Amino acid sequence: MYVAVKGGETAIANAHRLLADRRRGDRSVPSLTIEQLIQQLGLAVDRVMAEASLYDTSLAALAVKQARGDMIEAIFLLRAYRTTLPRFGTSLPIETGRMRVERRVSATYKDLPGGQLLGPTFDYTHRLLDPTLLGDDIVEQPANREDGLEAVMRVSDILGGEGLIEPDGNMPDDHVAGDLTREPMEFPMPRDLRLQALARGDEGFLLALGYSTQRGYGRTHPFVGEIRMGLVEVEFEVPGLDFAVSLGEIRVTECQMVNQFKGSAKAPPQFTRGYGLVFGQSERKAMSMSLVDRALRTEEFGEDVIAPAQDEEFVISHCDNVQATGFVEHLKLPHYVDFQAELDLVRRMRAKQAGRAQGEPREAAE
Amino acid sequence: MNPADHAPAADPRKRVMDLLARCSRGQLEAAWAQVEPKPAFARLREPETGLVMVRGRIGGGGSPFNLGEATVSRATIQLTEGTVGHGYRLGTDKTAAEWSAVFAALWQLPAMQDVVERTLLLPAEEQRAEEAAQLARETAATKVDFFTMVRGED
Image (cartoon, rainbow over all chains, first blue to last red; front, side, top):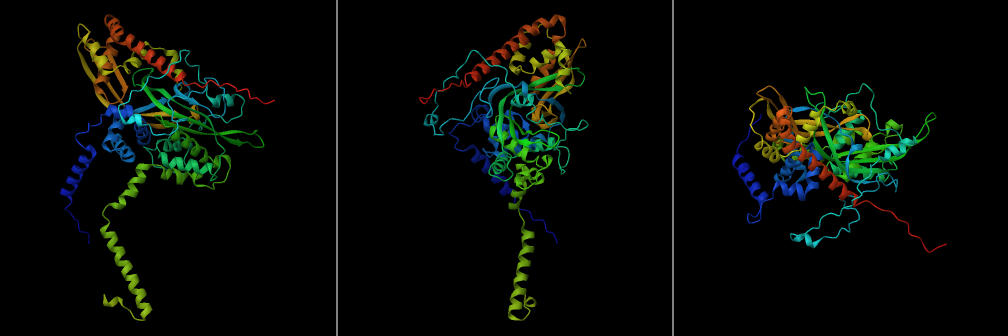
């Protein structure tokens, strides 16, 4: 028999009212503005856009505010919002080679066309808390260098010129890029779909998996060929116009990981690659993604799958933090009936065992 | 499709629409105040916000893959005399998309092109170039100039 139980309405309404109060906090402290979040907590906003798989700084900042800074909750909110919108179509692929670069570093070449451009990085900071930020500190304007920037050549093209590295990944000619938001997951999964999953995957999960490959669980001998971060145009073919329109620019971070060789009797050895591309400024995520992308190509290179990071189904099925939190957190919802059944079962098992021990059936007594 | 396929076409409307996509709503409304006489127009497509799936390329230059979506607002209007304008831009500002559509149409009228260029497009172009140059100067200042230390050994 199934009995519907009601009675939580008032408690729920009051809980949400309490949540709104706690979110706002002390009313004598000014409320955060969306612009403050975009300007001063920009990397939090970027992470929400990347893992929600929706580029919109204002909405992502709103989600961060509404979620009280709970990133996965904010990601969930933005994901839910995107389902309310129609899709106009698909952009032309962004051209990261033509990026307006704000940062570009290579760990494989010291001197390379375009140079090492550190940009706004935490690298080389001493990680000491800065008490001047306790107040409304005055921050100096950035330094300027007038001789400007040279063209920033892609490191993969430098190596590619000599044939020392595998080319950018190409799917078969008749392959249409898959879309996880439209099709159910199936394994084995082609690389383009895996990259989509990784690009929206949880930063912490991918970081841990990337780290595991470095510690020996599926080693790939990586070098950062190049990391670049900056602005790229999003071009879109508008129906009725015979040219692609630029919709504006978005900020992305790209990582080209260079990994150890693969060759065969026919082909001389060359470096292999892992690729990471992420919305916003998110170097840790782009690097982790490129490590995991390479690890997931294990079978393609004829190597044995021996480590978690190489297991496509394991990695892709568990990298989405909205799905993960949904399933983990559902455990706190009422399971009263399921639990009653288990309780009953364990009591009967115990009774049976006790009966066996005493040599008499006790179940009849209950 | 390769973007190079579009480059030679060089339809001047592309420059106009690209610039309009970058104008703020405030800039568009300020420019509208300077348009005289104000032409009437009708909506061919109601302003709406939706999504465009942004694609990347495997390895940066290989086959396309779906990176994630972006919000896009769009509108299409028709001036009473018949010219059609489309407005497309990132974000959720439908009003700005409609203003973009209005100016994209106005620009196509010989009598109006000058005022649209003067009040909107040329300043937008200048602003875009200056912002790009400033970003490049700030980034260039963080460029590493390596030098070699001569060590006091043989």
